[in-house]
Amino acid sequence: MQTALITGSAGLIGSEAVRFFAGLGFRVLGIDNDLRSYFFGPTASTAWNRDLLAEQFGERYVHHHVDIRDQRAIENIFRDHGGDIHLVVHTAAQPSHDWAAKEPHVDFTVNANGTLILLEATRQFAPEAVFIFTSTNKVYGDTPNFLPLVEEQTRWEIDAEHPYYRGIDEAMSIDQSKHSLFGASKVAADILVQEYGRYFAMKTASFRGGCLTGPSHSGAQLHGFLAYLMKCTVTGTPYTIFGYKGKQVRDNIHSHDLVNAFWHFYRSPRVGEVYNIGGSRHSNCSMIEAIAVSEELSGRKLEYRYSEENRSGDHIWYISDVAKFQGHYPEWHYKYDLRGILEELYTAQAARV
Image (cartoon, rainbow, N blue to C red; front, side, top):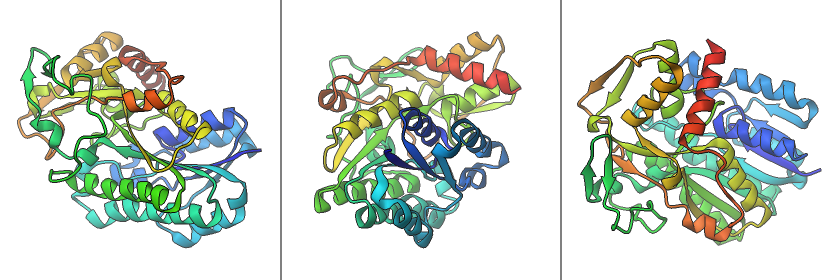
């Protein structure tokens, strides 16, 4: 039986990966200590999802309540199972650039040091395993904000003749820009993943995600754009739009589509790869466009206020160019578009209230 080790296993991408790979017959070792509840409060806890996984998969899912910064504990897990581990999917992170500024040491040790601990444990105990890392588009800092953007009625946009109209590719510089401290810690992790691939010839990949979303997301104000927006719409919780007239654009990829991309990479891995991955032109929206669809689906008006002050270093417009990944793995296709994502989010949220 193949074994996958998945960090952040009760979170959005981690739990999707557990379900995906356990569904294929893998034994899954999950690592998650619900640090998300520390970052964003008890309403963002992932404990409910952890319990669902244990109930659904029984002995095929082995949960470890371990912090990825605990080198000894991580090494012990790898030591016990290393020879059997075929795949490492690393999704655990501090994911908010606003939160990172409050506790920079925690942010950096979770995102950078935790990644180093996992990479080195993989190298020592499971060197043939495929190592997949969920990076972020924030590695590009605020460089996308200097593109020649045009204000339209409901969104910021870029001219159809511009080379980046189809989306931002991996050639964009990650240097000399404002990343946020979160972005900087993820850059460190991203480069480490590349370096372990190139230096030690390990099968590693950094997937630089756009907005990752899905019904398993414990959305919070500081992280989880679409999930939190739908939660506020359904529950009547006031929502705040930060800057850019609410016309800032994000591409959105369903957690299933992302994990399916991981699966394609696992079946035919490469060394030290980097991929931009997101909804691309297939699935993207501005905040006010997302609000309109959420209100339509829920039949409720969202109560929101507008803050003139945008989040520092926040993207005005970001759409991923996924052509590189699709070129390497042409059998990978999207299952969800934006409306399909929001319909699932509405169904999941309505069931919780």
